[in-house]
Image (cartoon, rainbow, N blue to C red):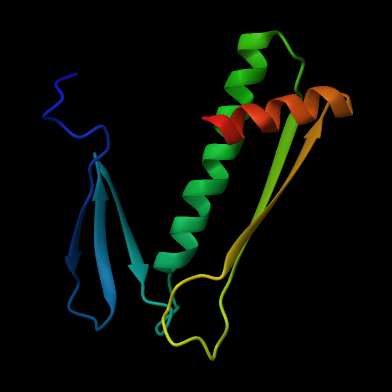
Length: 117
């Protein structure tokens, strides 16, 4: 892959509905709303799903590479921000990982691989 080409690319356009966007990644199309609208998946929720999904797929891949019999994984994520904050910045993001079919040492090892990558 050329250094001049992005690894990931997306396109978002206005939809004609205030604070609703039409989005495209390759041949996939989906709608995202501002949190103020909230009928569809929101921009913040899609951001959180991207992070937690990365946790699932990266850990599955690492388990396979290392010959660890990971049977199932669940990743929960939550973003926190004070309603009184002067900026919309997030204060923190908490994640929890539950891995099935592995012992605690293996689970910790796999999550550490995710943290390093």
